[in-house]
Length: 372
Image (cartoon, rainbow, N blue to C red; front, side):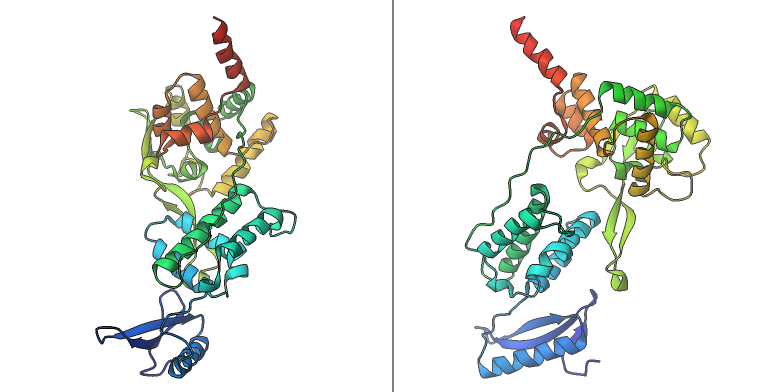
């Protein structure tokens, strides 16, 4: 345990911090530095070594941080501006891919060349199971975290700014899967037969564009059947644990990631009696649940795929229902600005570039206009 006068204490994030005198600034004021470690014994040893080196003139008053220390400080300081799901995702990227390589290196010794070589390796053979490389999109996420940590370290004088550029891999353009007209009719007919909480939620994603996290967090109080409105105000997110359970993640109901995701969506008139039918026989306050509490996105996704198998429809991810909704809206002539607001996008260009793709039939129809 720390002794009086050691300037060692345990932080709220579970790490130990040792404070020491680095020197005197131009105004004669004492400048202090900090060292961090996971245990008291480790931070005390680091403190003793630092004090010895300072006394011997072996190091300057500049602090030496490992990449791990800088990353932890960046993640902690970023929590005010990031949603819990983003913090969990970045933490997972750090622990799974980045820290095993750079964690113990002095951050001021890492170069852009080192990072680019690391990213290239991830593209070629970065999968944890050893079965090939990671996708360009996934590696771009790793790049984002690496750049953010290095920029944070430079801003806080833990290292000098990188002199060489970090190269982001180019994303591979993929057209997301979408239900065909026939598949959509088949799925809708299946959902309207002996309708229940799962089936009505699939219909809501098909005809309102709700994300799976928004579906799982949706409560009956969020649905105004009289005015035919769905009020999207929350979503189910996965966040990191705290304290002794840092390694465990938890599902929570939280506000959406962006202001644009707070939205009101009109309900198709034919869906109103279907919703009433489910609501009148349901006990749970959550639309997707038959019990107290919300259903996890993984559980709901399993139920959705079971519906597809029963209907004889090819396996297609749940997010494709939202993509199908967007595509059908464009085919029906709904303008992109309106669709962007319905989907909860911050910019209409996101709607065009990510979700809206012309079908081959529509391309043919459009080209035929050239000869009329």
